[in-house]
Length: 517
Image: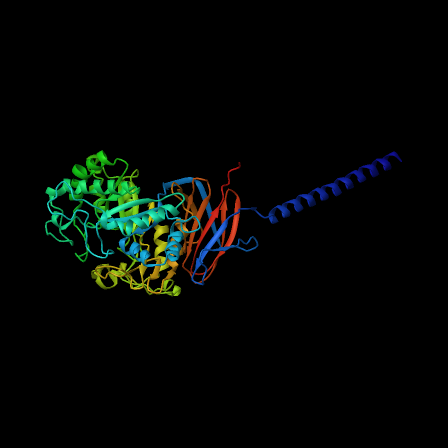
């Protein structure tokens, strides 16, 4: 009896243990399944899209339920260059046109570019003396052989350019920086006595340096601070078509090293000097080697400025990275870009999304360079170039004219181009092209003193860049040049945001600071 009872007791214990083990195993399995099915922590963000289908900085929703095909990860702990800003240029052409419009439309355009509700432009450019986008040729030093520039005057700018800048200053909450560039010295200082082509005579190096100083002082007296100057717009020339003045790299170094640099250091030490100011590519590298050859040659140069006209499809990142590596502590600023050699298409959004635009090189580039100048999509060219430049250590990106008319002027040489905003003064109409919204995707959200940050993307067809602003918010810009939409997950610190980018679209995703208060 005792043996039997003992056997039963053990049997019951074993049975209970088996049941308990099965229950525990079931619970573990359930927990594991549940864990696998749990959604990752949601990453909050606001998404804006501009697309060929018609979105114009339109807010689009996240979608946590979608299966994503593209995985993007953001790594804010790895940082690169500081961002100076984005914007456009105050030209006489743009300023003159604004003065032909009604007060309401003038304010509408300025608010669109500079207000907090608009594109919030933070980096701009203007011209010293006239350029092709002026109504005529003029200089602030019109009196020949006035070596001390006693007759220097910026009166020419007081009708149009200065009022436009001042109006923008009143609208801009955070302010904006201005880069000033000369297209040419007055003809009397040049070896060909002409507005076009030719070189600055060495005997006028000090007078021309004084010219820069007087310009900065005159603008300061108008309460317009100049942040930087470039030594010369396009020193390699433009085939002497409009205002220009030629330098070799060695000549520019001589001017800055022994004349302009010391003059501005003494009179306006806060103003930065940018060299080169022409196209990217091999010539940029050659100039960089000479400007940054040693401490003596580079001392007064705060950085280098570049333009985009060497190609309609290639931002030439290799040459940009080369310059950055030569002088990592110096500035690298894109100072000019536009859809050139094109009369604007009036109220035709689809043209700006079509591969129909051509540039100067389509007709005029040497045969060996034709490959760099195929037809292109204007929106893609802008967005691709900005993203490519940012990912290649460029710190600021400045568009050319802010406003042009339906002809693509006024331009005294009839060098017609396109701008983000086109106006018809006779009918007092304004057209915001898709290029305006393209610029705003970057200028509005990527603020001065932000830092470009690292990222990874599983889809090489999608262009990506990202920055972290001073307030620790993160801005991710995406360009989808494909004919189909893409479903995307963006991961940051184990949190995930899911969305869909439309076909042929730009998106900006703004992610608020993840730091706890």
